[in-house]
Length: 135
Image (cartoon, rainbow, N blue to C red; front, top):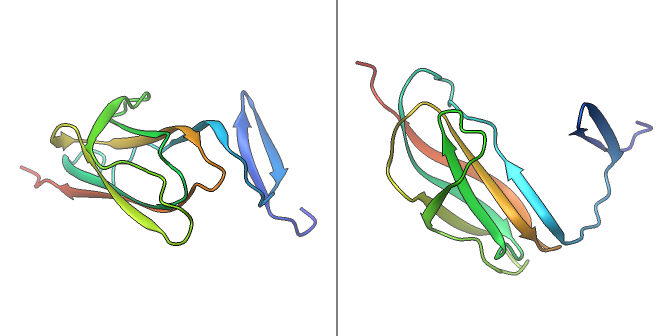
């Protein structure tokens, strides 16, 4: 709109579009939930090994969880890997490993929620998985 960068979000039944503002502030109700990912093969079983996140800033109050097979409220915890306060000098990588071995999943989704500091930023998120052979 008018050459401005815009972003949108769904609020109840409506979609609201806002002008991008690059200033940041702490968010006490931060939630980032992925879609239910089938990795291009919805009927093929998968092993999920970990979720790798590249970030900077203070992510120490953010709780990562995951769900399987269409779960809309991801509540399973990761046993290894956390987000911490790493500063903003460089990007840091963390590997989140599921609390139990994820074998034979048809879909996977993750959720990051909690309080995000004003300097927290995510660069990329990678899910490491392997398709199982079709029998």
